[in-house]
Amino acid sequence: MRDEFLRRNVLLDETDPAPAFHSLIAQDKDGMWRVCVQKDDSERKATIAILPDIPQTPTFMRQVFKGWRI
Image (cartoon, rainbow, N blue to C red; front, side, top):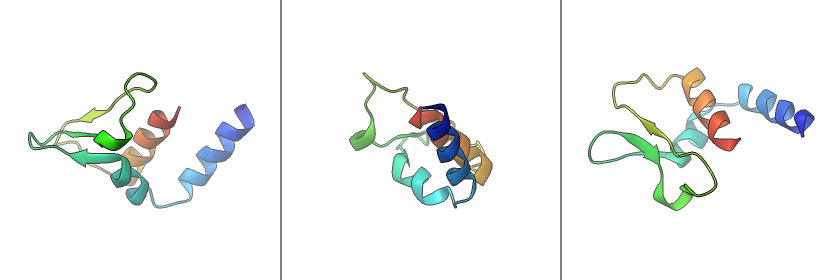
């Protein structure tokens, strides 16, 4: 499991995180960025809420996506 986790981390570090991030996260009417309703499984995974003024850099997107996949 450890090896697979590390392998996936390396793969994510080598790719553009924007497509995966934006397929997971969408902006709500209130400006907050949250897990898309279709992918939100709050009984089994942590949910995500990101303030609208947080810069969505590639590094930030990777960290969010990696944390959500755990």
